[in-house]
Image (cartoon, rainbow, N blue to C red):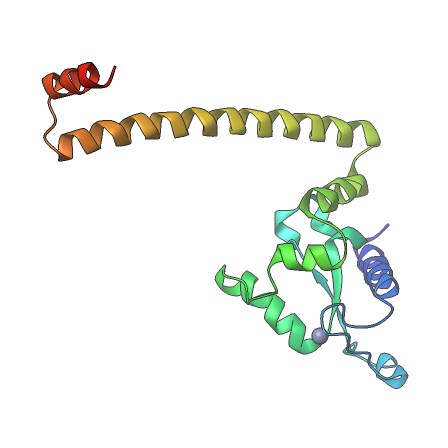
Length: 168
Ligand SMILES: [Zn+2]
């Protein structure tokens, strides 16, 4: 499939799923608006083309938006902070998808099923390791906070010992 065909089939799949309406506000362009260019709705990439493997030209990463909603959705790409109700997570929720699902389908544009499966196995192990590290880090942070608060209050080891004796 050429890049142009990929783009066109993406658009078609997104518009069809959304019933040729804006998936956010429900605006339904009149039939004649579809005759010329520009098209009355945009097939918006929820995750930007450059940040998803093979460009995210899949239904699971696309949403039909009218010009107004498209402007709101682009706020995030422009300044990194989403307009309220128009974050990537909000858009994915609206089309019953999410980032991982979009990546899974987008990988299939250029990879066989085994590669896709391996990618997600690797991703799962990375996520598990991240969770472990986050847990370890939060323990470190707690111990540091405890020590720092002792320093703040000028509590000495002897005080701590006394405190311990009184308590236990
Ligand atoms: Zn709209």
